[in-house]
Length: 245
Image (cartoon, rainbow, N blue to C red; front, top):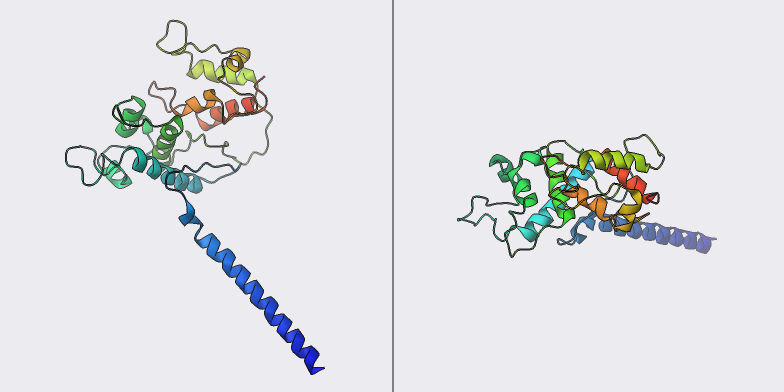
């Protein structure tokens, strides 16, 4: 009887010990997950619903990656011959009016990038995604999340909606794009026709993330506007992912 009781006690201790070790490993992994980020990589949201605090934190992380990789070699705290010095210091950028929080369209840092003035010739250009991240970061720092067009649209709590139609997409493109992208304009003509958009490779049916049309929203329109808002971008994304018919 004592032997059986002793065996049960030993088994109970082994189970308790195993659970403790398992929980410790899980906690350690969770606590240190932030250190596993590759400083040269960009994070992208994939969830259907994210809050604005998470968006801002993500944008700040990605902004630091971009500025460190593409700008900080010339614009750093040791710079003496450049008016823009500590480019990775957000407060420095705000205090010296290089960015106007909430208003990327009036922020000199962002305008220099979209106008092709920075980075200088011979240096790697920012990708469309990186330009969009800088724009969305400046906007989000001022509480403006209308420009955010991350991996999926922000869920405002309204639940699932029907796929967008090309009639809706045509209206968005006509209002925001065709004033420049027209016959005789300064930019390549954009024929607002579903068949033409597919045939020109601007949209890939069922693959919005890989479609050039959606990617271009991070840097256009350029006529002083912020670009399409999140609802408009979500409409175009929905249409493409539904087959772009």
